[in-house]
Amino acid sequence: MADLSERFEHALCYAAQLHVKQRRKASNVPYVAHLLSVTGLVLEYGGDEDEAIAALLHDAAEDQGGEATLAEIRNRFGARVAEIVAACSDTLDDPKPPWRERKEQAIATARAADPSVRLVMAADKLHNATSVLREWRDVGDDVWQRFRGGRDGSLWYYREMAVALASDDRTGVTRELVRVVAELHDVTGEPWPDRPEQI
Image (cartoon, rainbow, N blue to C red):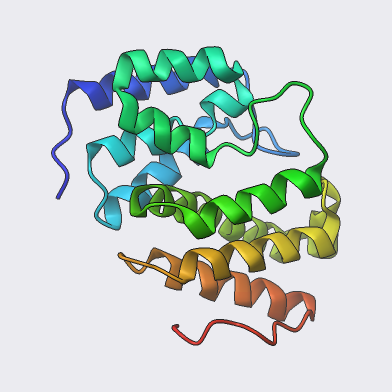
């Protein structure tokens, strides 16, 4: 069980400040709800304080200031947290590269990532995929209009990330990710012939 210190409290406040005006895609849900959910998953699956702080801040550099924010994270919370955040960021460039290019790079990063990065990535993707599945039950295929990759691109991305992360899972979080992504494929009628056998 992770012992959480004042560092975690500071990270919680910092994350809330950074994302205070941000909302979840096509909703009025404060973005911090996602950060708290991902952090909860990281802790539930055995993450330590650095991993929990990185979960709180996993989108901070990408969405709220790029390299300058990453440097601030390193200064406030240390190199290990900053390295996890950097690995979880699709890009720190502004403007961002094309969607497919960013996602292919994220998948490659996941395949080569260390266990701490994999844990935070898997928790992030698990919460996102669970949210999409819940929204699909409410609005059906209209849910895919909210995403740059559309239906096919989004399913491809979740599928490939689940496979990349499932290749070396220390906690079981990616087994849950595979189950949710498989359910997303089932409800949308999209086959997943190379679904990992580990679940």
